[in-house]
Image 1: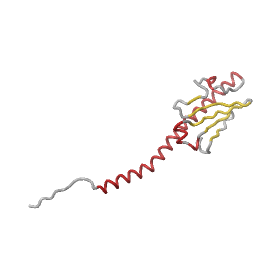
Image 2: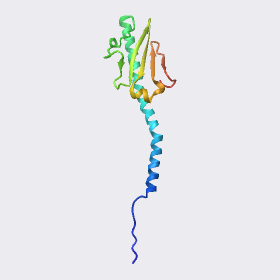
Image 3: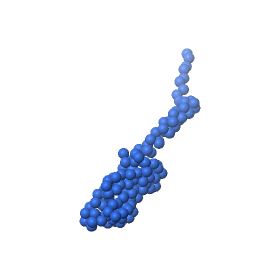
Image 4: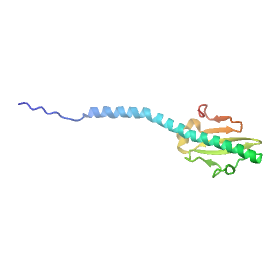
Length: 135
C-alpha cells in the first residue's frame, strides 16, 4: 500500500511574489487616494470662501463698506480657520472691493501643493495658484 501525503502551504517564492504584487498595487493606489482626499478637503475651503463672500455682501448692505475683520462677519477669529483646520481665510479690502483668500495649512498644504491659495473677489471672480483648483 502506497501512502500519498499532501503538504499544504506556500513556498517562499510564492509568498514573495504575492507581497511584491500587493506592493505594486499599493504604490499605484496611494497617490490617487491622497489626491482624492486633498480635493475633498479643498472643497471645504471653497465652501467657506463662498459663505464668507455672502457674509461680506450682507455686511456691505448694513454698513456701506466691506470689512477686513473676519469676526465682524460672525466667525470666531481673524483670520478664520476652517472647521477641519485645513485652511486659513482672511480678507483684504481696497476701496469698495474685497478679496477673500484661503491659504492651505498643515497636511493640506503638503498634499495639495498645486492649490495652496484659493481666492474670490467681490465680483465673484475665483482665482487660485493653479487653473484647476476651482473645479
